Image (cartoon, rainbow, N blue to C red; front, side, top):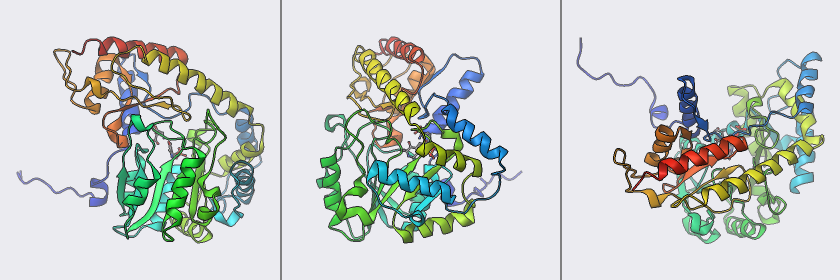
Length: 403
Ligand code: PMP
Ligand code: GLU
């Protein structure tokens, strides 16, 4: 037998790509659970609520009525009409339906955007802490992620002046989510205006604004950066159904943006997926224009849990939290534990910290390193109050052993 190490048959593209840390932690938690461990999984950013009944009924009706065929590649006219109304109603954004593209989740929407915009070496400024997939999608499209960090003392907000300083001849886009995954931070109207004013000075730079947590916002009314006149034509607004309507498994996201970009996204999608699921689109069109009470009830439940978890975590020394204004994540700084040991395991960084919680407390969370914040971890409080209480109690117990 040859002793030569076989070169991998895989492409450099895939070899260089990091696995999604959120999905990896969720899979690890499921695996441990299957082996009989009592794992509490706070790793995945997924509402624990079921999709509201009226939306499920709309999908069942769509199936019964035979909506089981391919739809137009950019989405059904019915759904794009509903999104057009939603953009105007909630976001003060004016798009015609040809500027709207529906995809298999906001993840695919983002992939379409960067495959459409980037040539090799083009830079995308990503405001950190950022959602894990941003940097990998940009790299997959042969772009270069330029990460601008911020920490808990700044409430995880990157000042517009730092964006201005990071712009180069190769900058193609600025990308961020607000409300933010992973921090729950929400940029204020003034902060968004400052970012818009910076980008407006550079006519070849686009804003990609991921607003998938729009409806899980505990503070002021949501503001879309694309509604500022000086960047209206240069903002691509990304949204989806996964979070606000608890429809993660339905795989539906969408964008509104310049016509040429929407056309490009449709072209890519036409070769890759042929568009999104037919009966999901039918139900989604209904959801957007239907009673939003279930969405607001979920938001209120998340707010209650946020306050509860912050209160419980505040009793554990060394865990520094802020007060997120949206989404369903808490993103504590735990650098006070670095260098400590329980006699068996030493915590060097956020990855060790999360491994320690997983192995010793059987609580799954995600290391901040995956989000561009290596002093932190992300806890998703999209879980029952009972599980959240138990998880924080377990975390407190195992952390008390670190000296
Ligand atoms: N953007 C952010 C900020 C997210 O947290 C997620 C989570 N899934 C997505 C995009 C992708 O959403 P979808 O499930 O619609 O692909
Ligand atoms: N967006 C969610 C999260 O951050 C779902 C998992 C994923 O797609 O990354 O956990």
